[in-house]
Length: 216
Image (cartoon, rainbow, N blue to C red; front, side, top):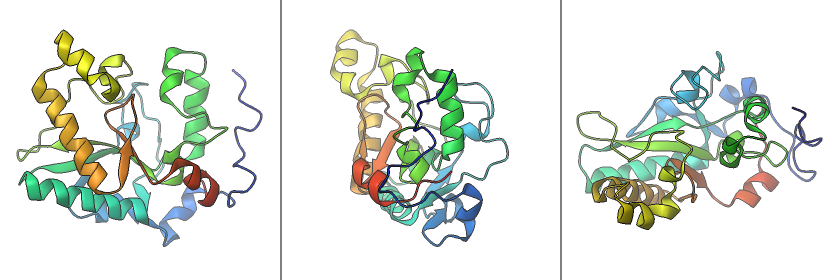
């Protein structure tokens, strides 16, 4: 399927994109492994994702921009102070434009398209300013959120919590875990979206696309 004609170009006023291979030497980025109180298990580096296969294929995507990384540490500290032993686990972070393009080719024209940013506009993941994240309990187990990561169905939509509680599709305990995650991320300057309990952006999306370099 053909891509939008502008799919490989950043907005006209945005800084020039940078290649993923240049990120390790760029002081504007921090490696996920350096973040205090935060673990990571990048699901697109393995097969536990919507595609059922590795999407990063040897790419080093365990990075965030410094401001998002600092916010994530703040979120983790907020959580630990209120739920001792609980931690954040990052499931996806920096997703280069080349991967976003490949995903778009696969999902365009399908119901899954609604869950991915058109590369013509740019995913906030591709700027290192978005994370997919969940909670780990003190025993290192992922919390029961009522639906899985990359489960692209209405059951994953935070906007539908009241409806799913009323129908019994989600339990009060599952919604409570989602709210803990939301509140922790909000403490770090992140905001969620209506359709994915796991996805959080740091800062204003329009500003990110306008002022920061996309990672290709």
